[in-house]
Length: 377
Image (cartoon, rainbow, N blue to C red; front, top):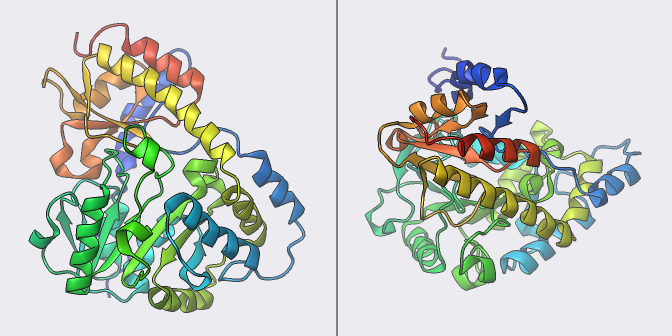
């Protein structure tokens, strides 16, 4: 009998260990820009809500507390232009949990379409369910896509920060309704737009009323407080959309004991009700992004011009001499650690992903080292 993890790819970040050793040996602060884990303080409102709920002796509700469910519904309407009911929201233990488990929880064993350049867990979660991952370009015409039971979208995308616009999302929703394909959209970077029209109009959601109308049948969207509120350690996220699809997820999660802790539900309620701290955190990332954009350009690295949002720079060597691993090696020798593009698909072997989630000191150190001389010089 095969074990559950058999046939899965190796955990990619383990292959960075030799370069991490070199980067961390560099004198001074290490600029570890390889992963997207928040480093800034958790908002005071979340901490106060957590402390106020520290007496939590009973089991928390799988559906979420009434306060959290109301906050989720209000948040989708206020920030994403999406009208969903109380039966159309569900708290989850981080968004990665749902990325990894959704095909299994929905009982999908056929084709699952995943972005060809994407976070590896879409592929892993598909394989865990016994389904077949089929890479596609989400920006292509959906009428050219193969038949499938489920399609994953990720907009803004990790690693590249590409954004599906409203017309593209409308076409995908129409295709899904015609073919009966479930559409699941991972939208966890939606609070971090860097280009128009998304700064002014917001990142569109597959659940937006102007995209899908009032009927959310066949549609699901994920969001996380990890990025916007520095709550990665709290594992506070949610899934919203079609109540008919959420109902079996709720039942299975009850049986499996997948319950968001009560104090975390209180903290998540607090951050969803407050937009000021989200804007403040975005301004922090905006400054770091500007510093790294200028410094990488001076070093001969070229940023993807289609990056419109998110927490990363998607870079390649402007001279074409270095592939992604070559860039990783060259930067590690300057005390800078980044992720090679092959982590996100073989078609990205010339790229690297550079994260904005490092302290200001680390970002400034990276910029200074990048400015010393072009890569390969």
